[in-house]
Length: 280
Image (tube, rainbow, N blue to C red):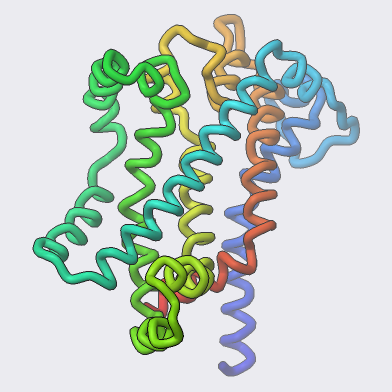
């Protein structure tokens, strides 16, 4: 690229990054602002008197720690279970020939087109009826949050991992069998490490969607507030006499930190995983 065009491209990239990052900056800034500045009708993009009062109100909530652990448990189970099931399913649809295989793959794509909001009410009745048979996945349990998120995470994860499994040459599999490796050994000691970047990429999307979920948490946790997740903690700061925007922004900042930490830990694997998916 010539220098003027390169400079223009870099300027557009920086402007886009600034626009994307500004809401996060304003969220963190509002969390540290005094209450008077947050409620001011002349907001300023800075503060000269930072305070931790909003964070004290957040951590002062009686069940905030429990909500945090519930969110962490639900997200961890969904990420691990979806990665394991998606890896096995992607291997099956890639390495084995069976009837309706193409139909099954198309159904994975169709499942992604259905809005989650349209399924909230049917899923509510499904969880209610399923709880009568298996209480662990009924309403007011963490299982009622894990199962729907697992179901919504799998189609995308399977479709994405299919490209990574398909990229592994069949000759490598045949060579492993000639060397005496069983199918199970090839699956976990050879294929799994090669597909691991794809597992990381799908795990990031699963973690973010599960961690930030409010719809299912609001719909399925009806009365057992001890099983609520972290997004439900935000409701405490919405009051009839006036919303506590400092507390809302502080709680949102706390909610964002695990996502950022998870992203930083898997950043390198994520980049290579997305690159492999695009290449496929």
